[in-house]
Image (cartoon, rainbow, N blue to C red):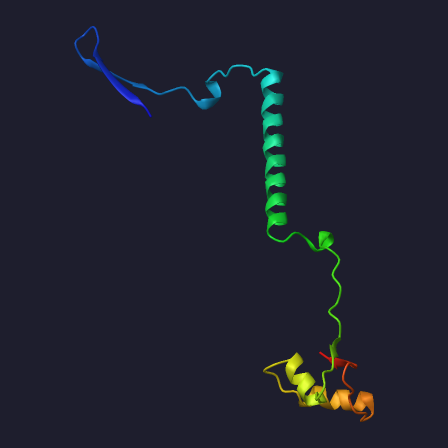
Length: 128
């Protein structure tokens, strides 16, 4: 930004002068002490570490990583059911998995048992 100044010289004629502010390079800056330099760097490092810590806490709260998941065991592939008096393979499968089509599981149980009858109190393994 510049300013225009007008003043009257010795012969009464106006003299126009143009004043410009000093360039940025010409502005003297104070010398910063090494203490201020290192204090600012330390503050930036502390903020960065704080952000990493907060991100790690958020990740842990949202489910963590696969490296720290608890040991998971696969679900058993069969369900053991104790037979009651009057039970058939069909009734056991319907009782174990209500609302599902029992035909496939009934066929698997009959093949595994080689067609043997079910006795009350016997433990029958029903596949999932």
